[in-house]
Each structure stands twice: as structure tokens, then as C-alpha cells.
Image (tube, rainbow, N blue to C red):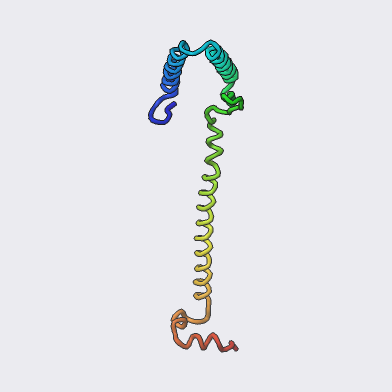
Amino acid sequence: MKLANNYTAEAMMGMEARFGLRIASALNRQGEATGHDISERLRVAREQALERARMSRRATAGVGSAATQVVGVSASGTAVLGGHPMWWTRLASVMPLVTLVVGLVLIDQWHDRAQINAVADVDSALLADDLPPDAYSDPGFVEFLNNPRE
């Protein structure tokens, strides 16, 4: 899986591990120069952090099938959902867009068909009328329409 800046997940985990080792060695060097009470508190804090990391790994290691979500525990103790979306999840997120496009195409076809039918009705009325088509372009045609037929 590619992440930002073209790093794979394995490369990112390796960089995190190296960073953690550097921090640990720097803390160990500084820890030798601190007093006994401070070094004891740091040792207890390290043990607690390692225990939380073990618990987090156990919580995410129990994932069975591909249909389940990965559940983890963050450093603050909150549950975190993760994992890769399944094919049907991606399909479900694209379906509203597909439905909208299909609906717009159908509306456009219906509108075009309605306009064609309206023009066809006018044409058939003109051809079936007792007036010749040239009469409609005559300036006196408006007068003809205003006078009632006998």
C-alpha cells in the first residue's frame, strides 16, 4: 500500500522503529545522569507504555476474516476503526453518482421526446386544418383569428 510521499507502510514502520530506537538511546544516555527517583519514574512510565503497546497489538491481531473491521486502541485508550474498504463499500459510495447521471440522461431524453411530440402535434394540426400553410404568414391572419367562425 502506498502512502503519502511514495512511502510504503513497511518503510514508514521501519522509519518509526528507527526513530524510536534513537529516542530510547538518547533517553538512556540522559537517564544515567539523572537521580534515582527520576530514573525509577521513567522506568515505570516505559513499562506502562510497553504494556499499552502490547495490548494494542493483541487487540488488532485478533482480526479473522476480511469482512471484519480492524479495531485498535489508541494511546489515549479510545477505540479506533481501520482497515481497507471492501469492494461493496466502494460500490455503495459510487452508486448515488451513477443513479444521478442515469436520471439526468433519462430526463433529457423525456424532455426531447416531449418537444418532438409537441412539434408533431402542431405540424399535424397545420396540415389537417382547412387553411393553407401560406395563410399563417399573411398579415391579415390575426384578423381572421379574432373574428368568430361561422
